[in-house]
Image 1 (cartoon, rainbow, N blue to C red):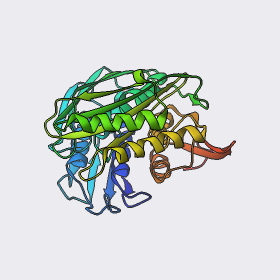
Image 2 (image 1 turned 60 degrees about the vertical axis):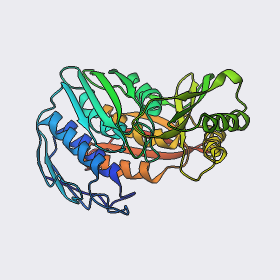
Image 3 (image 1 turned 90 degrees about the vertical axis):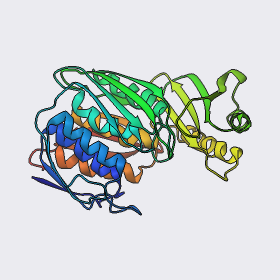
Image 4 (image 1 turned 90 degrees about the horizontal axis):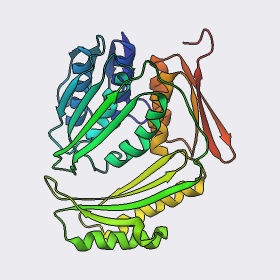
Length: 343
């Protein structure tokens, strides 16, 4: 049984999610210790417990230690069981991160699956639905599967209540790909979502985005959405010939609308200035599907702690190496088969 130290690297929930995904995909029994040791409230929160439960259900796994606050979980999966499933977090925890936990093994399962997750779809601790749908799945679908996501209802922190459905048509195997250049710009869009807040909040944010990113009038809009609680999110989508990237910022009590928009403007400008097609959030999330494919490459900016952590966890499960090298001011990551004799 493989032992995973959850305190390594960034010491958060990503170690747990990656370990669960690859445990199911490779049918490797694991013990995860020191879960989320690097966080103010270590151990399993509702979102992480739901990820464990989802991985258990789709693999018929034997599980010990899966309870709120637990810092140690034993997980022994069986064969992948494609099907129709629904999981509810019971909080504003990220529904998309739960979906991403079970998606990798379902990409090459023996039959299609539909996964519904109820929870947060737009919260500051995770990429929003639009990132999952446009940026992440846009890359995954280049590998052979057909994955389609539907936002049935948005959910914000802390109430949650959002509902996401993910339809997976698997492939026999995953293809690797190279993403070294974004290509020509196709489209850009800024969208402000507000629920239960004065419309003026959205109007001020949109005005700041238009000014900060030099948008045309038809490239931005404010959408008042129905949600369980109040919420505010800004999403900017940059669609290029070879990749779509999505950036987000979230309203907070006591923070001016212009300041919220300013965060997103800085993120977008930083991405464009770096000249690399893959942003820092997409970089760490592409590692798992490319490692399961056995190869691929992409260019990104400086490596985040999440990306470095994901590399170490993936190496525990799969015989792959990650070559990291400077590439004209950017960082090129190449996924390849591990050298013979290397564990």
